[in-house]
Image (tube, rainbow, N blue to C red; front, side, top):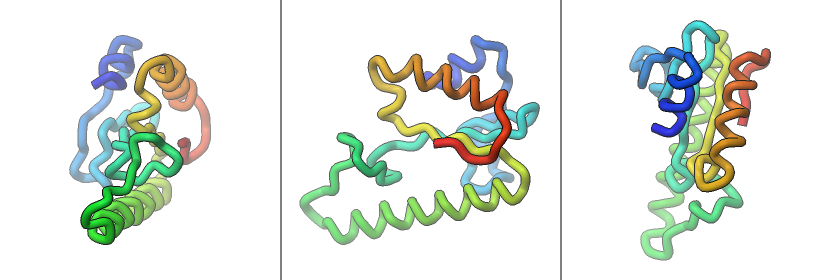
Length: 119
């Protein structure tokens, strides 16, 4: 919601969760040929992040689940890129506390930039 409100306030218009695109991106900005994924740090295995802690129970099951999510993410990103989309990936930790403003400004800069994938 933070990203959605910020971009809408800046005049950007987008679609939500387009089922026709690989991975059902959180935001689709057709004018900029860009999709944005806002990933949960735990569910997408954000390495080095304090919000990604491997559970102590059923560890193998959780690691399989998270690794499967990461594999699907990579597959979807590659498909989107091959279809000509720019892909912006934001993790939830980048929207916490003082990091949020910097992250939101980075998104706007990336929308205007050239390239394919940004982390």
